[in-house]
Length: 311
Image (cartoon, rainbow, N blue to C red; front, side, top):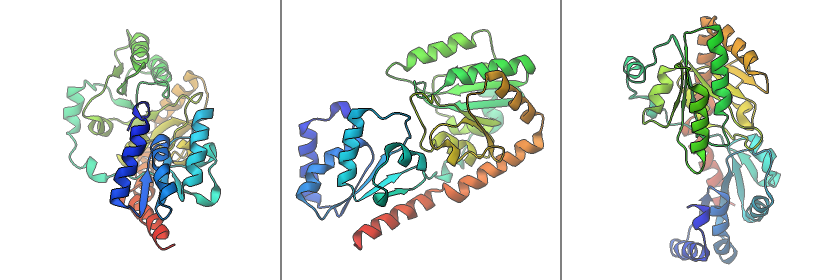
């Protein structure tokens, strides 16, 4: 359901469906999607609303979104966020609020393409591969990723940087900027999407995520979860809830606004310490299996539902 396509018919259509189904609980994701349920909830008070609209932690929330969110929060019985940073950003009523971290289905990683096949197919011909998986959009800082790659290239020639992402609605411009920046640097590759994302992460050595902190704060990034589930050390900037999953010097590095050359030197030191890389990768995997499993997330949702039903 896209917000630009929502009109009065959407509200009435949902109302009629819900009236026919008579749900005990409605669980929503998205602020507009949650708003659509409210006329039904006003009419049928016994139905409970679980609101999971908080999936990021933006540095600034615009007035229109804030108004819609506050209306949603008023009618919600439980408000769920995938990060504590999200709760801090949106500031919903504390007594209604709870954090449930995203869960990953580990079966997704069972039938990956062989690493040698991936390296040959995507020309991963260097000793080390860095990967950043995100949309080419204003929310992500791909230019910083590749600028650090340029600085690394001044220190050593055995590293390849692959930026993987889809784009729409203006993202073409950012992708073209990345192509221009990396022109003449064969070890820096912007890639406009692929069906082998998990296999590429598996073949890489380090996962990276840089967010544009001026406009976006992560909730808990699925890309970081995937990197870590596959046992990769991670490098990310401290944006939103990222610090809730990336522990600096434990499973990777959490950086701020350091110059590209400083981060390049940090990376160089890590690449020269294979034992540290291996330990960080193990810590990454342990963290995901402990706190970010699909089973754990499902049980947390069940607890919320049961609590509402038993009220």
